[in-house]
Length: 352
Image (cartoon, rainbow, N blue to C red):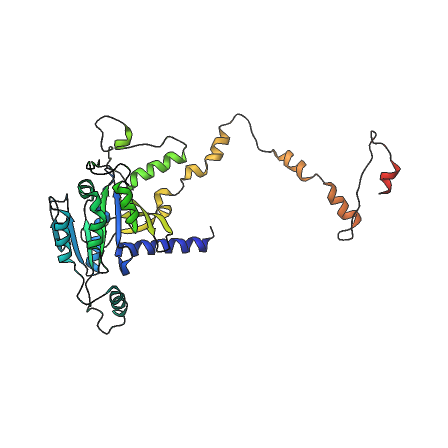
């Protein structure tokens, strides 16, 4: 890829990722985040909340597993033990769209606020809905997922929901075995999907691939009895890998992998973002660049040339050099051939 094209691709990917994190202009009405036991989704969810507060949006947190109200959350709703219809009623009462406004009006207002003499006065308030876990809802009433999403998502509200991949999902007996799995249904309805993983594990896997070694495994993938989470060391790399997949209206998917490094200061600036290919931990090591010379030095024979062999090779005059000097360059040419003892003289061939 050319340097200019590579720079354009990098800038476009980072801007798209920031647009999804900011949820500007209804960039993604339904954002699905997939995590595992090895890497939680906390830093990414906190980034959504922090950016929502900076944009002065209302942040509504729907809790199935969270006990305490997270920082910077405006409304905290406990959903444990409530029916889907009761939960929908409570959520819609908090994030109902303004009366008399349509989706077309919302788009017009979002564009006109930049040209207004008082841009700080908002004609409508955006709401960010955070659902900490879809597993209880998918396990209890998987058929109600489309109804749940369709009832709470509107032009003034964007939903960010989390699904835990490693949590076993026990479906009710009423579910037909030929019906799609709840995760398949969620992935089909989502307009953007984020898969998070550990940066430390990604780095170790990359190093094993560069050395043609077996890739390490952690947690449940180790296959050891009683092991749920892999061992963690104190010098692990901070941050997490976010694999983004955004579905455009045309149906084309845009995929890219990023590094999200949370801010070290509590309540400070937002997290730093970078492409996975630009991260310094994935840069080629110096020992790998000079590995070819090191391997040559360990061999019992030499593949190089001595000074005499180099001088003899440079002194060889190739046949086409004689043809250019004797006949003349650009004036045509003739075949220069010296007959040997074993050659048979033929008059017809000599006339050609």
